[in-house]
Structure formats: C-alpha cells, structure tokens
Length: 429
Image 1 (tube, rainbow, N blue to C red):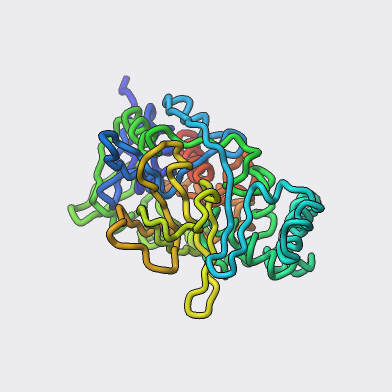
Image 2 (tube, helix red, strand yellow):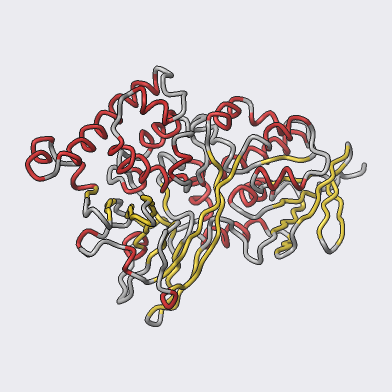
C-alpha cells in the first residue's frame, strides 16, 4: 500500500501570521518560508543593543501583550516557553507648546480634585473621558457604535479638546495611523479595545501587561526552532499562480511548485502577488488600505517633556509644526522593558521634528491596516475566503475569532488568522 506523501506548503511572509500558520502546520507538511527581508519576524522586530557589557533587546513595533486580550498568542508563548516579563503600564500626555500635561494619575482623580488643580479645558477632557467609557460600553452592547468614530463623537456632542487631547493620542498609538484617519474607524472597534484593555489604552494600569523577555525576537527564534522550515529570506516572491492541483511560487531565482501556499503578507501586497486571484480573494484584499509610519530607535531626550518625573512607558506628544498641530508617540523603552541603564532609550512613532542624528540607533518603515467600516463589515465572512482554495490568506486585517469582529489590526489578530488558515488547510488535506 502506498503511503501518502507529505504535502509541500510555502509560507509567503514571515511575520506573526506566517509564523503562526507554519507552526500549526509543522507536523502535517513540509514547509518552506519565503521572506523578502533578510530578517524574519515582521513587526516582532527587536534591535539588540550593546549596553555596558550586556545585550538589551529593544522592541520597535510589537512590544506588549496581556492574557485576556491576547489569549491565543499567550497560549503560543506558553507552548514555546517564552518568558513574559511584567510591565507596569502608565501613560503621559504632553503638549510641547501649550504646556498641558496629564496622564494615568490625573485620570484617576475625582472630579473635585481635577476642578481644584487643573484648567477648565482639562476638566472638560476628564469629564468626557468618563462619559465616553461609560456610554461607550452601553452603546457597544446595544449595537449603537457600529458607525465611524467621528460620527459617533459628533452624535455624542464631544468637544474638540477631548478629540485632540485624548482620542487622537490613544488611538493613533494603538493602530499606528494618522489623526485624520482615526475618525473613519468603527466606533465599536475603538470602544472594544478600551473595554478589553484599559481606559488608558496601552498605558492603562488595570491590565497585567507583559513584554517578551529579551525582546519579541525571542519568540520568533523559538518558533522557528520548533517548526524547522526551509527558509528563503532576502528572496522576495514576485508571483503566485494557483491551479487546481497546486500552486507555483516565483522569485528572481526561479519558480517552484507547492501543494498549498499560505500568504501572510499585507492585503495589498498579497493582491499584487496573486496573478490569478479568485473573485472572493480579490474582493477581500482590495478593501484594505494601509498607512505607512516611521519608527526611530534613539537616545535623544528632546522628544520628551522637560520634567523627567513625568516620563512614563507610553508618552503621547503634541507639537505645532508650521502652524499645524501634530501628534506622535514616544515609548520610553527603559520603563517599557523594565531595565536600568545610564542611557535613556526611546522609540518614536512619526515624530514630526528632527531627532538628533548622532543619537539614532535604527530606523524602520512600518505599514498598518486602516480599520474602517468596510474592513469591519467584511469580518463577518472573511474566513470563508480560505475555503477550498489552494492559496490561504492571513494577516492582521483578519479578526481574532476568539475575541470577535472588533479585534482587528493587532498581533493577536495576526497570530489567530495564521492559526485559522492552517486549520482550514489541514481540514482539506
């Protein structure tokens, strides 16, 4: 009797989604991973810095997680034996021009304490933040938040101060998109994030935040060791051609045939690679837009407020540039990763001024999906795109089934989508 052959599966894209798919297929398939970059991991991108005779792993994209909101990812880390380091979340907002500054501690004050110590503008922000989180939970349950966030805030009569000095800052940090695109987000997605995390967003203190010991590259290395794939890094895929009995993957080095292909690239990149995408694949992939961000790892303290006592792990800044208010995020990595050093390390996201070039350690361009109403609406049936096709799709533009259609754009969503793509493929073998 002839033994069935082990199927050959190509994974295109070695970010969290592709690694997840490969991990869940590791015992059922012969796996080849293609990655256009020379490194693997995608947004699990750790810069290892020599500091006073030791190596510090400093993350530049995916940094924190918690068990309630990153359930599948945490189970993956448990299986791999990944070290989860406790992180005490807290945030600080500062306006470099007006001097307005508040953070986790101020939002915990009573209304009377705020009225005694702060301006009328901040009192308005404080009151509306409380109202937003109280009403938002009710509206989420009643399905009254399935509209763009800008429209939701208009209906609720929220002030411009609250939008500029709370909503923009916290949401731009989570989804890494510019202020003007935040208003297109589904209000339900924003509210669900705060419900599942904390009212302080990524800087909330009511959540058991963790970082990966040694940086997120540690989990990537452990996963690849468990998978044992053939790795084709620095070899960009240029075309994927699917047929009834297999799939051909083409790079500059030539073409190779596989039984199945899992594409863990961004939606627009996946669409460009599929030279004969079916109608359902084309419909899903064409709906997702992306935004590019610039991230810099450096040691320039000018990006932070003058009062060092105000520095938190998560710092949301606002500054006037050529008459326009610009926002940015500054992660204070010493606090985020919980290490002590004579040097202060910062990761800034879309800082609108110039960082001292002498302090720059690394720079990276990242792209993130823009979560709008169209992307959320297609989540109801998005996983059907992988039924019956030789090419399976995954990425953070899918939602994490375990958490519902509003869990989009996160490391958990990316990991979960790779896991689901693998499960679908296995069910068809």
